[in-house]
Image (cartoon, rainbow, N blue to C red; front, side, top):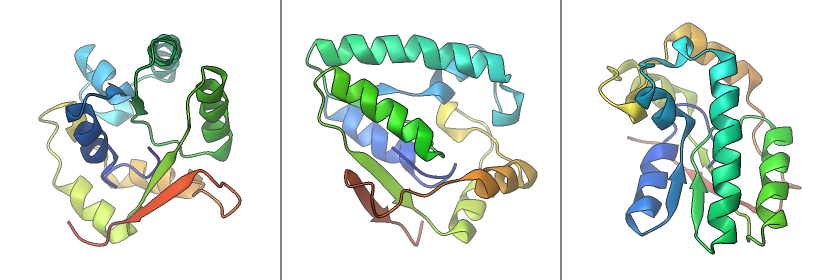
Length: 152
């Protein structure tokens, strides 16, 4: 998965999960640890979760499972890293980019109330930082499927 917070990544990933895919989500694990908003998850905790999940992703792929990695993958370098992880375990890799207008993302995030792991509160200031740092997949990233979502 790839896209800004609020773009629809988790909704898409949960659909795959319902079809038998194994879903990996930093937000879900952080929620289980007691973190209820995105800004409250310390960087070192997110790194620990990511390391545990990388190992679990590798094991799942080695077992022949279909996996969906429900992260934002906001940088090309991170996407490349996980592409290499998947391919090194025999996976066919596809990046699904949820291209969602910023206004729609802001509206969706403003409606969040922190009711569950896929409903993390992301305030406007944090979203501004996400938008400023987000690297959308480029045309030379050939394994990308772009899904444009213009409405809720």
